[in-house]
Length: 192
Image (cartoon, rainbow, N blue to C red; front, top):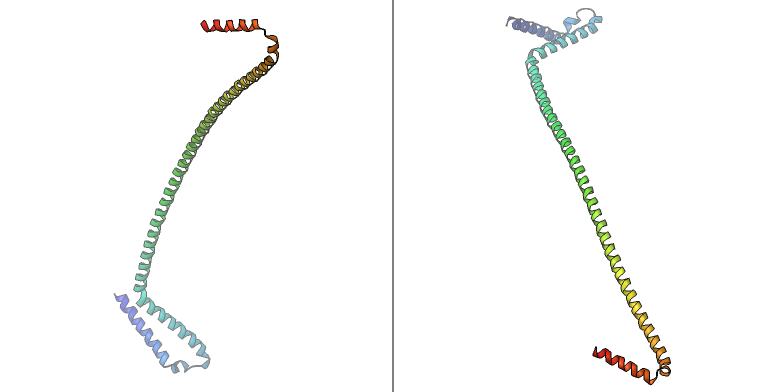
């Protein structure tokens, strides 16, 4: 407490000296006029010391309080930023984990789709083989049918040609005995 009182008295003394020199500059001029620049420099330093003393005396506690408050604000902002950083890092890790899970799922889906495609491809190949076998069988039957039809048409054509030849040659070659014998054979075949 004594230190504060003595520093207050010293401050008051300095204040009076300063006010005296400020309001009574003639006393400083009583000496040599070349002393004026030294007087100005000394008064500037005295003013500076007084200003610093006043600032230190009256603004020390508010400045300390202000700096403490700023320190607390900075600390709380740093803590908030650290928690935000931790949260973002956690989200990044979660996103990376999810990305890995998605990559694995994508690979599984890709493998499954490839397997399904191979199965479908094999089914299509088997189906195409079956259809080609059916088409070949159908074509073979059609060809056989055409061959049978062609044979029948050829037989009919040959029969027609044979009948024409027979009609041309038989009337002169058949006798009444031949006709009778043919009629007898025909009658026996009907009885049997």
